[in-house]
Length: 426
Image (cartoon, rainbow, N blue to C red; front, side, top):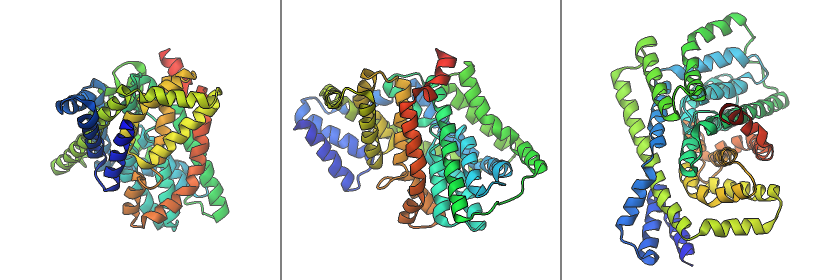
């Protein structure tokens, strides 16, 4: 009954439009004051402890790096290179959309940053080429989910902090699944392009590809610096985030000279605002998760799931269903902070590696960004494309099919996820 009260208060606050962080902290405070028998300062102390973590320093720096990439015109160079690379295929701009997201994924680590940065360029280009708005928004939304899977990844950083897992191993684990997601989406685009009679957007020209590669070369070095530095042990994920910011500043201020002082100040302000929101959610979710843990909710959930079946594949299917539902209603960072203490013990009990489970969880929650009622990526792209939210949902629906199939593939074939971490770290 006490835990039920906690969730009822949280649900009511969310229904009345209270921001997620305030709803989590408020429901936790009501629970502790009513049933906890602890002083109110415990809420503040637990929230502060939730963000008192060195790896979380990577969050503002990766956000800043992504914002700098968008502002300095780096995303446009990446898009043009991807266009010359795969634009000759039938439905070429759909493939370009995916290719650009794969490249940008190695820089920003956030789906919303991908959607907001590349999305405006991609959707405009696809509309100019007479692609319908639903298809343009749908493939842009679906491809943006690759960003948090391929390293670097902000959700992976949050998961690593909460689960006590190696962030370097999590980054390595996301690389191959991200490539599989890209391949699955390109197959879907090829199928839809043939069915709808989409044209080839341009002829393949080796000279054009070479020219756009030259213009984008220094931008393409960003993921090499980040991922290569982490995998080689040259620096930690947190230090890699700082290196990414330094490289983005160098490109914007010295090489391309597209980053003015006014733009830099605006980017810094946006980064501070986004970081404050993310860390506030982490802090509020940490006190909520602490209440669940101290009241032995994870043990109860573990017992319930393990009692349903003795077959690991059935339990993994149930965990995926739970995460898909949670992703539809809860912001990614809050969902990770709350659900990891609840579901990770169950996954470990059936023999799932915490690193493998991290990729499963993040991919599940990325699908939540494409589904109502939360669907943050859909809200961003509906504004970018100036279409109703409902049309964005309809356009994205077909691309959920390959993404769900990839989720199942990654869940039940752990070698896809664990091969690279085992090769590099173990």
